[in-house]
Length: 185
View (cartoon, rainbow, N blue to C red):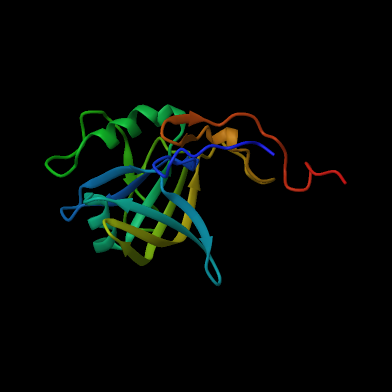
């Protein structure tokens, strides 16, 4: 058995996919915020995206008002955009110092980023609030992927080149196997 030491409760070893959440402001202007507290769960008959947002982001207010959002997977080619959107505030002005393309999603009333290779289009079904954090349970209405990526036999994570976050930004490494291929009795 490994010997362990306490490092307290301020550290987090949660590896999270990086997404940029898209919503529309009250005036119809697209709003985007990077969020890494994203997961998936199953309801009785459909998948739901689970997104937690902390603080007083416009994105939170928009998601609650519009009940629609997109979750745009961040690929490494989008890392500068993610970092910019996370560093700039949309409270006073639109975040437009760095150019990026977006268009209305196909299944919900929310903007989708042109550069994202995987976009969840979601309706907000339920909101759970704990302190300054709101957790959104979102029905996945559609998933749009880059047309150049073939997923007929499943998908290879490397094709999407996602950014993962665990205190810093990381790139996915090697594939280790599928369920049932690793354990050999």
